Length: 77
Image (tube, rainbow, N blue to C red; front, side):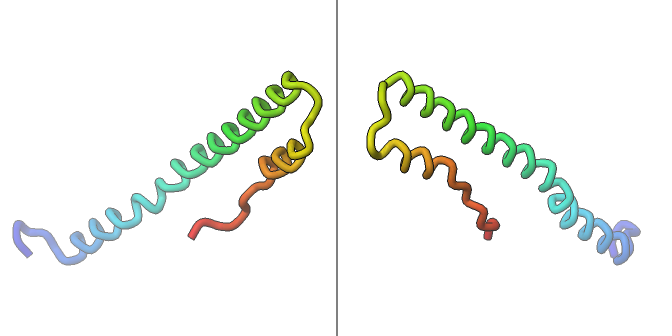
């Protein structure tokens, strides 16, 4: 190899450049999931407060709220 680099050091650098994003992904994923869950919760509370202020519940309100409570538990592809 040129400049005194060995094949082993090139392989080590290649492994590190491949593994680094895999190791940092959970640090990005978990806060994003937590933020998403918090946003869904805040939205649900806002909808409930709005419906409470609007008066008696309409016929479809319960189905709408139920749909908001349904969580997509399918793993990402």
